[in-house]
Image 1 (cartoon, rainbow, N blue to C red):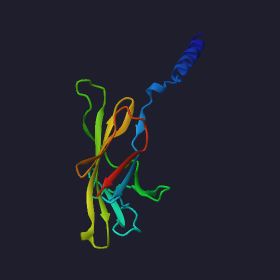
Image 2: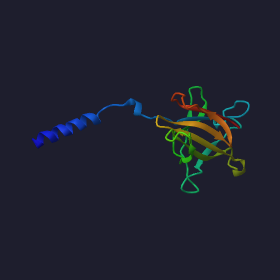
Image 3: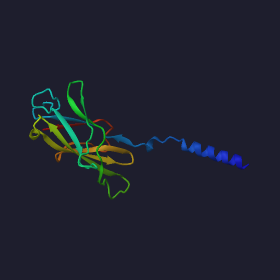
Length: 172
């Protein structure tokens, strides 16, 4: 008798654990396509164009060491525009609670990276900037909420916006 009870008990819990609840899934939306251009609209990431950057490096400001490189690959659109493709890699720190009066509604995080753009072999020609990415984390979504470059907002997204690749354009 005990054998049957244990078998029914195991089968019951196996069926309960197989239930599918799509509402419990959290949407993740953190991909960034970062375009760099000058005020005339020239693509500054195309190293073949005069006046553009010849390379770049990215360092995580919140990294464990002074030199904590972040891998951001360079990609090109079908229109031959270059962009930096950032998925993840920089450490995130808690920024604040999204809604302190409603506990459990989420938390915001941020990452900071120092980007050094190279124009020539002369180190004095390098251009640096700080890229800050702010994230919104709730039970239903983890997404980029705001991007700042050198303290200026270059991208923002509402909480109810659909999941997509976030396009950021920085004008230097």
